[in-house]
Image (cartoon, rainbow, N blue to C red; front, side):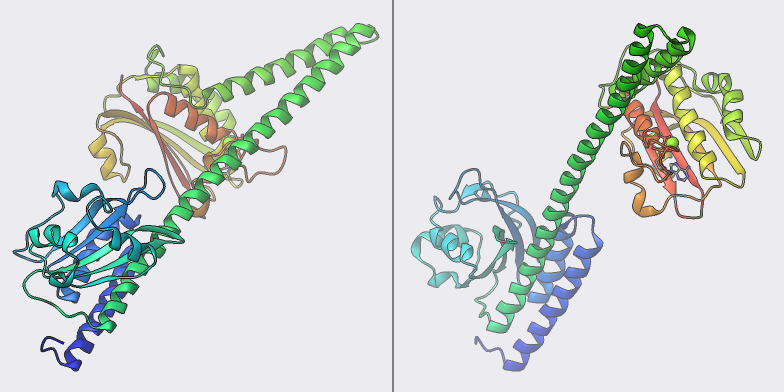
Length: 421
Ligand SMILES: Nc1ncnc2c1ncn2[C@@H]1O[C@H](COP(=O)(O)OP(=O)(O)OP(=O)(O)O)[C@@H](O)[C@H]1O
Ligand SMILES: [Mg+2]
């Protein structure tokens, strides 16, 4: 027990468990496990009283390959970091003579002990890093061996008490659990996107079918010649218009940025439709269109910009059944100024169109969904759910970004950033 009293060991184990709990909190608060891991190692290292803590990820290219890559490291003051050690990057553990480690770790068992007692083929790499004793715990994300977390003692030989070994196993399990949850979330998000695309495809098929049925019926009636030709032609024309609107909206999705799009003066384009926007907003709603400073032109068709404003004003009006205010504000700003507003954008200058209303707002849990094609909270026949999806498509195609601020009962602001041409 290298001179440590039972009481010392227990208090060290207590400190480790406490650190594990703090590490779990840190992971919980982070956006991703990778973001939290540097802090997690910095919490665990001092608590375990070791020289170095590191995380290796198993990067399997083919079955049974045990290639590993060092992802994170924490070093006690004065201990030499190994994260840049080329021998430890993209190395095959088996080829390095660490077949025993692979067998033990994949079986869920720890590697622990004094380096002096390790098999001969394992010692050189560890001794080159001045490691005297190690504890390595496997990390499993669900059923899969994700990698391992290791603890090095460099200054002196360290005996690992079973309670400490178990406490640090819990640390590895916390990491593994978080990784498993994260990949399940990513999978769920992907499945969700596929489902949304499926819904969109069937929605479009449904709309197209309806329009075709209308056209067919009118053509049949015209053929029989027993009808008011003008009326039939009017209906046909209407159906064709709707079909072409649908196809335009669909084409707007995922279209690459169009370098030939015309240069548009946003303020001018909006002033041209101000009257229309006011009529859409209705009498009970006050609509203001303002600009701040010099407004730089953007590369997007004026009709698209008008469509964007129209969709946003329509949404705003629908959210204010008892009237209210819609503020349209245009300004040109730098990505750094947008960042101060909370919007992270690639560096550059943007012209921003902000549309803010005093309506019922959008609950936070719907913020991602509202941009999905065919997502609507409106009664059937009231909304198709294409308004924001179309905006998203058009703005993305122009190389811009859409941001949303809203909470239930607190109004909504949609910000459209278009790169300055
Ligand atoms: N300004 C807003 N205030 C409150 N909710 C909004 C606002 N804008 C959008 N939403 C919510 O987002 C949903 C999706 O909006 P979107 O414009 O894509 O479709 P829609 O308005 O329902 O239908 P469409 O625009 O195709 O007629 C709306 O149903 C509504 O729930
Ligand atoms: Mg809408």
